[in-house]
Each structure stands twice: as structure tokens, then as C-alpha cells.
Image (cartoon, rainbow, N blue to C red; front, side):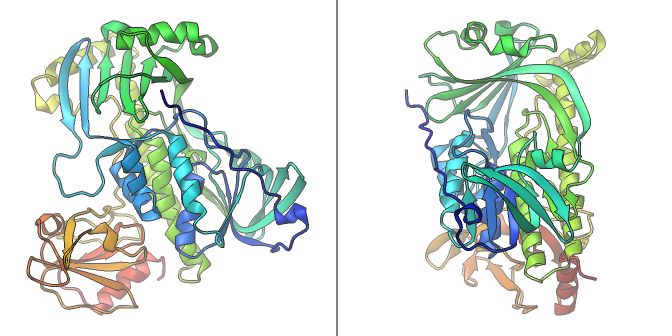
Length: 531
């Protein structure tokens, strides 16, 4: 069986300790070279903003860790330049099956319609994602300074900036930055240095998570069991990954000893009961506790928290890694606009508004899943079992079943940067929907036509509008203009005759039935946090 081959990226002495010329201050310092930190650096580089990325290690994360990457996250990764590579390597799936005991209760399809470039979900181990992101970051040698074996040992806020103290094999040094982005995970040193802590709930429940190597033909779908016969009284989850790796999650109960449960002599018999075989190898094992917690605020002057350093949820529902990448998508264009003088610093407050809203949505869904999966009384268990029985035949009951509601893009409707519209087919605040288009003789995708800045996107017979150098993308029916909707998906998803102002993160800022330059300009200023 082919295991992932971990390779060291190596250490290069930074100029601050090697005696080479170094700037006195950097625009952005990013702490952490996981998926969130690396994506953050790439997003900023695509917008012309330089950053230094600091990490205490020089190898990708050990173990699969985050594996389920949702459609919206894949679209963000596609914009960053690694999405197609992830889909090519990963295991694509959209079907989920839910069982009670050995009985299949029902199945669901997460993407029942076609006309999307990215699939509903791709399963791909975190170490591959980090590898692809490191390789992509190296496409920007003048804008991304990757510093491995550079361990941050201290952080402090200063006037209009932040300072990090870093330890290397050649000694310690200081970095001063206009902005410091904490992408250093759930055990964030930056958060600790600033004396900040999470608020929220720690659930009294433990789960075993194991990756095994196994030659098998299990289908590419999510399988979740309530009270399976192979793990009585508990719950279980099975996911397929590339390279003959399978992810298994098993509920253990709060009284389980985490150290004992990690031992092979305890893990192996459990896995044998799940798959009915013994011809497998353990690749990675961990025991985790359900947590649903976050910082009160993510923006602390010039120190900004992104991903797990800002919020943490249980793994069920794939909301952790996906939520972190959606943080990046929200913050990158705003920080670049502030640094490039296109927006006031007050725009960064909207990162708090919008991503705390997203984190709270994830926490609510994760908490509900935990409560449904781990009933705390006989009455709660009776209610859950009745819901599962009803769900086999009654569609309405399936909405009450919660084995981890899977990650979907967060709507920003009603928050300050959006201009409301009562009649728009796609409501302001929504993430844009992809659709296949024809450009001349070439098949293209709608999201690929958005240029990473603000874009006007119109459908049908509308004149081209020029506003503040905002790019205008016009989609016509077949036989019409430069971009044609040959499948009809784009017009169904956006509505004929509408014009949308799209934010750089591909969320709708405003929608117009009869746009004019003044209205579009006002919506553009609002989306930039300008009065």
C-alpha cells in the first residue's frame, strides 16, 4: 500500500539572523503554515500584498486531519490555483447514507443538479492540501516569504502594528508588521500571548478517529450509523480517501481514557468489527472531545485571528477546515483593499461581523448535531429513535435527523456591506453560483470570469455599464454576446434582466433590475465600508 511520503521543506536562515538586508517592517506577518495560513498568503499575493509566513515545523501535518472539502471551499481553492489539482487527486462524493442499527434509514444527494465545475465534496487528506498550497505559494517568490523552522515565541501589539518574536536554529529575532494574522490553530500561541480565551461549550463526549489503509471497494459516499451492531449503543462514520485510506470515527463516551483508546491493541479490535476484516494497517489515530467555542472578537487592533485560532467546532459536518478557508476568502480582499489605500481600515470590522456570523452558524449546527448524536437522557434517546424510525418513510422527519449537517456557504444577507434587494433571484449576501458558459468555441465557467476584484455581472439584454473601472461581465442567451448560457443554468440561477455587483470574494453585494451608474457606485462604496 502506498503511504504518503513526508518531505521536509528545509530551513533557510532569515535575513534578520543571517546579516542580509531586511526591511524594518512588513505589511503582513502570518503565523502558521497550515491550510488557512498558506491560503491567506496566496490570496494576498494574488492581490499584490506581500507577506511572511512563519511556522515552527518544516513538514506538512502528520495524519489526514481535515479531509472533507466542500463545494464552496473548492471554488475558493480554485481561485487560489489548487482546486483542480485537489479534485483530480481526491475522492469525489455527493451521496450520504444514514443507518439506524443495520437498517438504512435513507440516503441523500448533496448536489442533485449538474452545471457546476466543483463537486459537492472531495475527500483529500490535509497533508496533500498543505503540500499543494506550499507549492503554489512558491509561485510568488517576491510576495510570499515562507519561513519554516521559525517558531513564534512571543507576540505583542504596538501602535498601528504588531511585533512577533521568533526562534530559529540560528537564534532569535523580531519582526514588526502592519498586520499580524494568527493562523496557528486551536492551541494558538498568539491567542495565549494576548490573554484571550474561547467562550462556548465543551461537550462531555469523546470520539476515536482513525485512518486505516485497506484494499477495498467501499463506494465513495458518506456512511453514518446510529447504534450499529458493530459498535453497540454508540455512533460511527465511514469515509473513503485517496491511496486506499479510510476514515473511521467511533463514539467512545465521556468515561473513555484517551490514552488507552489510542493504543493499537484497543483500536484494532474496534476497526475489525466495523469492516469485518483484519487485513488493514493503522495510518493515524487520535481521540478528540467535542467543542463548540470561539473568541468574542476576531479583530484585535492589528492582530486578526483566522480559522481554528478564532473558532473551533466538532469535526462532524466538515465545518472546521472549510470554515477556516471561508475566513480567508472574507478577509483577504478586505485587508488588501485597506493596505492598498482603496478602503478605510474600518472595513476590517466587517470581518468580525461576517465571519462571527459564519462561526455562530457553524457552532449552532455542530452543537445540534452533538445533542442529537449523544442524547443525555432516556427521553432524549426515545425521541431520537422515534425520529429515525419516522425518517425512513416520512420526508419531513429527515429534517430533524442530525448526524452533522454538512458545510454550506454562509449567507451574508442583512449585514452592513450588502445593499438589500427584495426582488433579486440571488439575494445580496449569497455566494455566487457557478454555471457553464460558452466563450466563442471554448467552454468556460461563470466563476472563472470573475476577476478577483469587484465585478458587474448582468444577464440578458442590458447595455454595458462603466462604473469606477469595475469589470462588466455580460451573459447572453445562445446566439447573443461574447459569453453565452448554452445550458440555461446561469439564467435560472440569476434571473434574466438582473445585474449584480459581485464582491471580490464572489458574494453578491447588490442586485439591480434597472441599474444606473449612481446606484452601482453607491453599492460599491457601501461594500468597501465607505460612507
